[in-house]
Length: 267
Image (cartoon, rainbow, N blue to C red; front, side, top):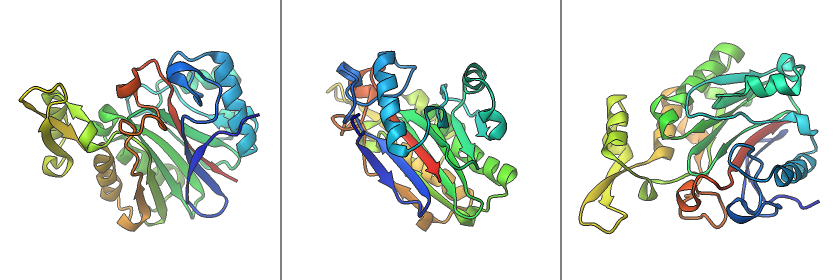
């Protein structure tokens, strides 16, 4: 069995947190090589082989690797013992239309899939609670990261001062060209536009300029707004668009391509 190539993050002892790369899997074409997302058109056989290799690497059973079907909204699901007792079909239904997971159960790897969108991991080092968030531009506008931290506080009693956060690989400011309607959506929701946007020459080579949005910074600001200390927030330097040879990028490869899996496992 091929061991997947993962990029790990430091959340301290008894935690494995990581983002997958495209390397060391069996998927082909725009899914090559490592993809475990069922919703992007990849071969189910390849997905299962890749998923099995990841679970073996993490030393967990296949049913302890949990990922939702994301829809760019703000639904958050807690993975608890009651969820784990559901049948596979019941779990799949519960994970439909979900963009963030959280758990206090050890031995369960929760995670989200991205290919330019921003994955965010949050870990409570005192309560031993983890959270994985999918923040595309729509979820970012709807402040899913803020809502996830608020949910950790209300459900698990987390304190912002105890939280560690990692913003994973995603598209960065220089590469994320958007239409005026996207810029206006952020402005309408009260984001500080001077700190998260810039105009660059249009990518089509015309003489006009287009707005670009800094999605990692948008989500960093949301973490800060909930009281997480700046020193406890890390931001990946990886721009998926610029590094699409190592990380999946839907803008480079099209939507029918693989996805990065960013997960966290407490043990």
